[in-house]
Image 1 (tube, protein in one colour):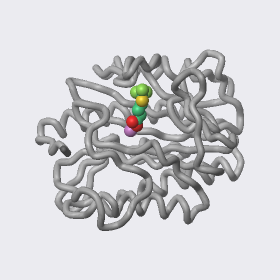
Image 2 (cartoon, helix red, strand yellow; image 1 turned 180 degrees about the horizontal axis):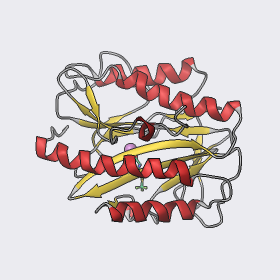
Image 3 (cartoon, helix red, strand yellow; image 1 turned 180 degrees about the vertical axis):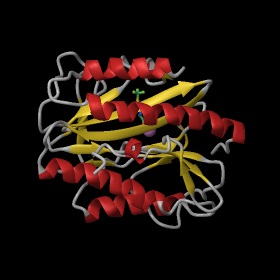
Amino acid sequence: MIIIKSPREIALMKEAGRILAVTFKAMKEAVKPGVSTKELNDEIARIFAENGGESAEKGYYGYPADACISVNEVILHGIPSAKKILRDGDIVSIDLVVKKDGYMADACRTYPVGIVGERQLAIIKASEKCFWEGVSLVKEGVHLGDIEAKIGETAHSLGYNVPRDYTGHGIGSEMHEDPYIPNYGKPGTGPILREGMTLCFEPMLLEGKADVRTLNDGWSVLSKDGKLTSHYENTVLVTKDGYEILTYDGDPASLSGLSND
Ligand code: MF3
Ligand code: CO
């Protein structure tokens, strides 16, 4: 069942989303060569606390950190570590879920570390583009499959694959609610979107083959062929004639992992 949120619930999710937007802007400064992913994790936890929020990832099925921080071939659920030091030319995705006053927001940005190459820039841009192309179709009355198909087609048209087993999802007082939202689909299929639904669209792209594997830390998911990956996500409110991004603070800089110019 897809839960329709009340105006009060939406306001709470928007506040959670604002915290993520502020955190992502801070990460734009914090992500640089020489920094460990553990240092980023701790800064994220500090910003959440300063804003009256807390990580909803920590403890989720035993997840051991405040943030998922995934470098290069790691596509999802990278566990922050003092030993994982960012290097010039890496790309790093920071996937965060914050909870405040019982409601959550979930978003992800992929950032370049220092000076990156064309391949790195291209896959970051592509994950953002897949999201915006898909979300541009969101409004009351459309089928979820329309958006899923648009995300998948955009990824393929840019030369990327998407993993089959990891999806977007509804969100609210739970991190993962109905519906599940694959990054591929068929127009005209699936549930019909209604005003007040809150959905996470999260294109995950693979430069190489779609096959992924999980490390023996039990969490980190990486491309089997070791090629680059990228991930972009926002929590989106469906409205009568469109959508609203809830993981946004009014500053466009909060929406992209790339620099503002
Ligand atoms: N942020 C991820 C998502 O999109 C989930 C994080 S898994 C966790 O849905 F274990 F880290 F919480
Ligand atoms: Co998500």
